[in-house]
Structures are given as C-alpha cells and as structure tokens.
Length: 169
Ligand code: OFO
Image (cartoon, rainbow, N blue to C red):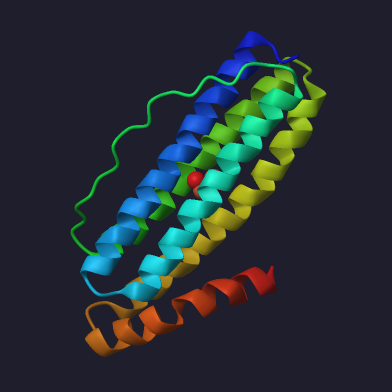
C-alpha cells in the first residue's frame, strides 16, 4: 500500500496530467481556428498522450491497493496571442511537469518506496522526451517567424517532424 503522502502526491499528479490534456486540447482548438490543422492534430495527439499518463498513474495507485481520488481540473486558457505563444507555453508547461515528477521521485526515495521509484523512472524518461519534443517544435515555430508560406509548410509537415524526432530517439 502507498503511504498517505505518496498517494496524495500521485493523485495530484493525475489531476495535473489531466490538466495538461485539457490545455493541449484547448490549444488544438485554437490552432484549428487559425487554420493550422497540422499543429491542431499534433496537439490533439498530445492530449491523448497526457490522458494515457494520467491513466498510467490511476492504474498504479490501484495496483498498490490504494485510493484514487480525482480532483477538479482547472480551466485551461482558450485564447492565445499567437502560435509562438502556444508553443512557448507548451515548453514551459513541460518543464513544470518535470519538476512535479522529480518531486514525486524525491519523496519516494525519502520514504524508501522502491516500487514508486521504479514507476517514476518511466515518467522521468518520458519527461526528457516531452521537453525535447516541445523545444524542437518551439524552435521550428520561432524559425519561421511571421513568414506565412513557411508557416504553412511547417503546418503540413509538423506531424512527420514529430515522428522523426521520435525515431531519432
Ligand atoms: Fe505528461 O507529460 Fe506532458 O505534461
């Protein structure tokens, strides 16, 4: 069984992963409204990925014979000043999530909760990938700047680019 402290922090992380899912879905909707369907698809896929992170933690709590307590998910922003602002926020958000994951790991080390350390190792590796992908996309968006034709080209190819980053890994 998980300690109360570890159970609470993992329940909090489920909420945070669900917030990430909400945030990326909201960003996806924004991209659709500015006719950037490639970025919209990319963010919609990230929404699904975040939900899978939440469910992985949900199952982990149950596997440890402990209690899942779902909290209210904050409302994500629905207005964004630009595509660049969206991906700056994605990158900052992922760095903040990394901190949360590291905190859970640190607590599991302090409490000598070895199974939680193993579970968190998966998330630590995942965050390396999440930050890398977020930065890759952000740098591409920065690169095209205000160029309409370049932005349209990137929008068409961004999904493949994301897969190529995965393959390089
Ligand atoms: Fe769940 O990794 Fe992004 O937030």
